Image (tube, rainbow, N blue to C red; front, side):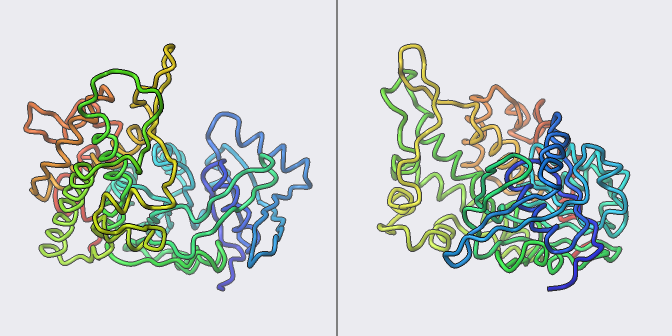
Length: 410
């Protein structure tokens, strides 16, 4: 691995993943600043570390053996001026809705050649960076967008001990190089910070990570399939989420995925960019869960017989009568609509590709949320009154093909 000595890294966040990222990065010799803007979280982490001789312990299992590592962070702070001084790499390890706050706070410290990494970046990540940094600076920084978080992990003791329950074998992502060379080589640098696993696999245009996000279609198609013609009566128990889907829902999901694949094909054919990372949902399931699925005959049977999904139920609220009703305030709606499907719809609009199935699910979803992202009276365009809470390109005034592809061209 390349030496990380003197590389200045800001880890944004104070949750499970941020603790692991900070611990592993510090172990590998980097100058690690952990920044949390949430309430008094930074102070509480600092106090916990101080009571532990400044050491953050990471416990993980390697080939059946439990190992413990103690790492020393440079600083834990709420202050962006302290965290961001001369920063080389900004690592966002927080949910998508929190990215903007960190980017705005660190903006005075982001300079040409800085690397900004979303882990995960989540759909619309490049649009948000471009919108906040502005066209000149955003062209001069390097972006890394990863499809997932590398680990399943939990905090054993807040601020001082985190356990890695599982590490992905590999992680899919994409890099958008800036016009100014970055001060660190982005992928090898991150690989050195994380260790040998997951193996980082960066390829294709950064838009592929946004379009290839599966939650935006899976969660919403299953919610729609279960509840779109619900009679309003409470249920004795919460319905099974994946095991309860029927062929009609499978067919809807198939069609939504086909619309995204058609969009990816249109963009790659007309613009010459690599969007091979965008898979049809059935192929994605075979790739990710092939060995866990017992009946692969259709998309619906594949989802129903996926062992990893066994027993997962719909998010519901239990009323005073003890009966279950749908919970539309759950992340399947609050994250996968504004930080998911609306963005894909916004891209399709700019490339003038109709998406009737996505439109149907979006119209229903926003109605249940009491929001307006797409405006029905404007032909279903992404210009609704609540567009400000999304990451759709239109929210940032990105309305041309060139702007959506991001400059500089790759």
